[in-house]
Length: 172
Image (cartoon, rainbow, N blue to C red; front, side):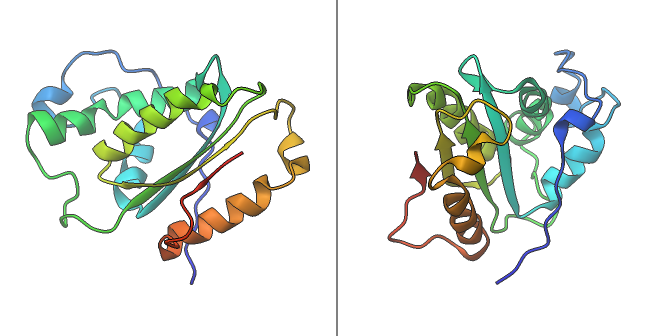
């Protein structure tokens, strides 16, 4: 079992938010030219995707939200223009989300779960495991969590190999 992994730090990309010009409704492509075009190509090329985000005000971080919103062009391609998303046809694609937040409440992850359900649908990815870790507020604090790193490793392996029927993800 193995995989080629590429780490993309969204905070290092220069991406504008969706300007809702609706050009993508005619072309299936975002007309705003910035670093999103490279990310766009990677999103279509990859077979597995793991999004990791801190939670701010019960939602994904702003960089993740910008990237997700800019995929409106994919939504338009798929649902408005009825064009295939992937040039070579459907294939086994799966996504996973990891989110950490500082409060004790598990409710902070409800919005994230719903956002990624629909985001992965547009990307034609089966939603894989999700790892939500609460009471993690400071940088590096997740390393002190009793199970988070082991859970992330296990779920990442499952994402590559396929899920173990006895395991349905983790929420801590």
